[in-house]
Image 1 (cartoon, rainbow, N blue to C red):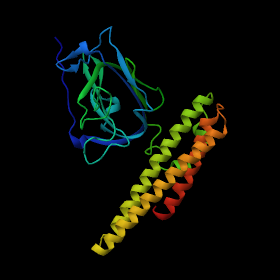
Image 2 (image 1 turned 180 degrees about the horizontal axis):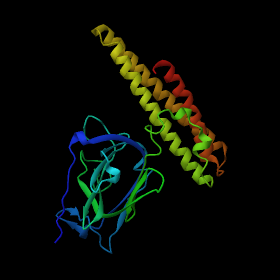
Image 3 (image 1 turned 90 degrees about the vertical axis):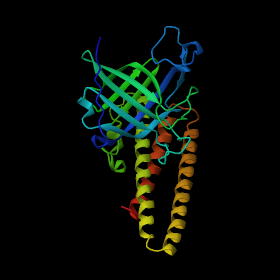
Image 4 (image 1 turned 180 degrees about the vertical axis):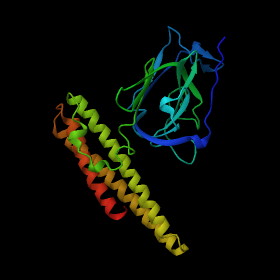
Length: 287
């Protein structure tokens, strides 16, 4: 019998990172496979799977909490927060979050995935209470900080090459250089989507800085705080209006290709141009 020793890092041992996350999840929906009202995390040859693809789950730059040195550790737990997850812990949580686990016994790594969804795949719970399985595989790109856990129709990719930690000012990047290794139009599209999400994360960062600065500048008296609240509301409304325009403009460019294969790339370029212009505006106001 093997004895499994699991070490749990304390909170101070964890650090926040950011990565472009692509997540798709499959889970068994066969009623007879339930055990005490829950589906068993192990597999059966006759499992029937339901699947959520990345565009319905997570396809974004996400906050990731991981223990120091996890890339070379024998055991770890990594937490991934969906971009729309509510910070106040309210119900429902607003987005998905995932726990990825690595344990070690018999000299081998074993990988599991837990998430906060219900049986329908909706992000319902305040903690990652449902373990989907303990039999996933792990791989890493040989020369890049890109990590993948996958198996049985599920796949989670954490791309730390596409993050504000590596590119803190994506608006200054050479886009052609970033997409230069793409071999076809589809790969270019994936790269453009990555860049769009990276610029979106940068916009969110600058907006957070802007709202924080306004709040601090107008916090000296109740009267000033009242004006500060109004300015914050106006700033949020302006950003929402810009997002609506940027989305509509991207759709307009996409439609102008009349179904051509370059529609996604063209719309993506347009979105990035708009994002860069908006970032420039915010940087002028709050650096």
